[in-house]
Length: 280
Length: 254
Image (cartoon, rainbow over all chains, first blue to last red; front, side, top):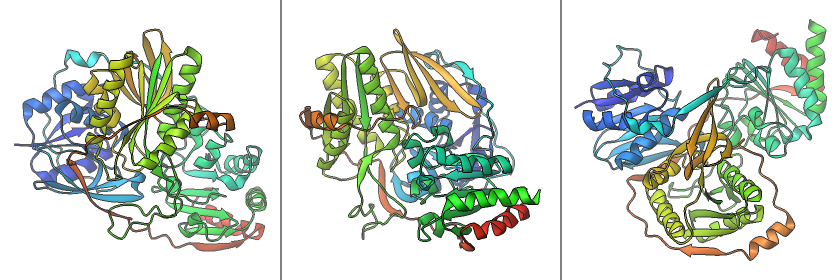
């Protein structure tokens, strides 16, 4: 009896491996063996192997695949776990609200299916588990990728940016983002924003940082006029340093930042840009 | 064309989540409620498709009696009618939620024919299970594509754009289909005053499904420890600019 890891050969999969090993001996199915997308082949392989548990990375594709396996095999599925206690039932700790809340739950299942939330457990850098072969099945042809669209190459991508200058409701208007863009331009930074801003139509959704936007991991995140609702903070967990600029010193983001500047962002942000120009 | 959108009522959590004394739920005493963000885009898309193609749009939710507020919100945006799977406020796991929605969808389709598209959010804002739409799709034997940022009907098919690392994957699947969507699919409109007025008289069918024992059983909730950040003030107003730039210089970002 073995534990099956759905391995996409990323850091997130090696983190999932750490959790998988807690259930026992691990075998792996390589995602690229079933590319681009073959949940039916995976379900057939699982039925054949009869593993005690199936573990994957809590990435978009990992959660999608495990949910399909769960639906096909009529089993419960726990997404985005950060800890497990094997047993019957398995006790899992999993993320809710994009990680702003943790749930302890009992997973009553003859074959636990779960994913591991990325960047919540250390990666297992030991010997890679042996791989199991998967054969494609005909059923996977209904839903398949027919085309890939490249991203438009405009500016710095939010997910990979080293610096992000981000604006919230406090920026006041679409036009108000000119000073945010100016500072971002000087720093080679990406422009981000909060959900209040995209809901108001001031910025496109692709600029949104947060639970329902992009999760970011910059060296420095400069938050201008952002209150710091849990929705926004859920996207900031990977940020190394947070600088908050806000007129309200009690705003949640001011309390959860590394550095704060209190006052009117419309004065402070241009002053920072001017200071950078002066030093160059 | 017939379109359904499934939504979930969730609290607007604001800056800090407080739990009830038993630690099994969020203390919502001082919180407002909304529909989960991804699902709001599903509702908007359903309204746009019916505006363009004519037909019937339905919003479904499983939730407490108060969830009728979110059904009315969806109807204020333009959805024609609602089906409320009413609960006593207890937590339902994703499997049970999907099974109850499946029964309601099957009953509606038996009377009126299949939905061309059933929209779900990619994951709910609160419990984040990533599975209800997929479960309903597999039970109905329909294709399912998840995490969509663009949906375009093309005759008997629907073209779906899914955001992935390094661009978008495109899937073209036959309808009827089940699609799970993400915020950014569209920009949901604000409900108009006449829209709100009309929503009051739109029909809400109520059913009361039985809650099975959950197989993913919530035991307790906890707010994770903070990240240990201790805010250091760099000053106030424009006078703080040099200190901010010093910080950026130290980080090697100038």
